[in-house]
Image (cartoon, rainbow, N blue to C red):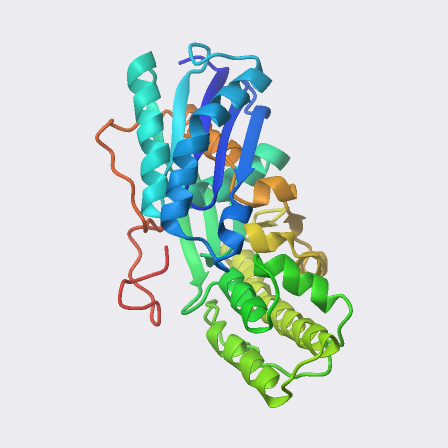
Length: 364
C-alpha cells in the first residue's frame, strides 16, 4: 500500500448531502482537496425538523453532482482515488442507503476498496485531520442526535464514558426553540435570542450535576423551560430572550460539571500524558457560549481544547474520508460490498446498555 493515499468520502446520514476528496501523506498529515456540502434546511424548515423521506429523496437528487464537484475541486477523477469511504451509520436509514449504495457502485465499477464508516468515528478522528492530535484524548460529541463523552484511544478503539439518558443536547435546543415559537434549526435561534436575554431571570435545573457518573440528562430541563413559558403567558420577545439565556446558562453549567469530572478521570487514567486534550464535535459545538465554557474549563485544568472549524463540526464528508484514510493507514481491511447500513451503531459496540438509555439500549 502506498504511503500517500487519496480517498473519496460520502456523507448522507441526515439532512446534509456531502462529498469530499482528502489526501494523507507519508507523515500522516491530511489535506482536504475538495469538500462540498449541500444543506437541506429549506426543505425541512416548514416541518420544524428533518423529514426522513424528504431527506432521502434530496440525497438521491444531489449526490452524483456533489461527487463530481468534489472531484473537480480536487483536480481528481475517480480513477485517481485509492478508495471510497461512505457513511454506513448511525443515522436515518433512507439516507444511509443512498450514500452507501452509491459508494458501493463506484467501488465496484472502478475496482476500489470500500470503507463503510461509522459517522461518529468521523467526528472522533477529525481533530487528527485538523490539529494532528495524538492518541489518547477525550471527545465531547454534542449534536441533534448524540451527546456523549468518549475516550479515544486509537482508530477503532473507543470507550464511552458518558451518554445522555434521554434527550440529546441538540434535541433539547430544538425543542426549546419550537415551544417558544423560534425558527428551525433551534440551536442557532436559541443562541441569537439568548444574546439579549437575562440569564439570571429563571433558575432552571442542572440535571445530574454533582453525580459521579458522567452521563447527561436534558429532558427535565426542557420540561422546566415549558413550565416557565406557560407561567408567564403570553410571552414577550424579552421573555423569550430571558428564557433562552437562562436555558443556555443551565446547559453551560451542566456541561462544566459533567466534563470537569471527565477531565479528572482522564488525568487519573493517563497520568503520563503530558498534554491531555478535549475535543468538541457536533452541531452544538458551534454555540459560542458553550465553546467559551469548555475553553475556560480546559484552561483551568491544563487541558488543550480542540474545536475543529465549524464546517467540520457539523456533518461533512471530509471527516468520513479521513476516517477511511486512518483505517487504511492502520492496515485495516476494507469492507465487503455486502455491508449493510445501520441506523444505530455505537462507537463502543461491545459496551453494555447503560441505565436509562431506553428500551432499544444505549444511545448510538
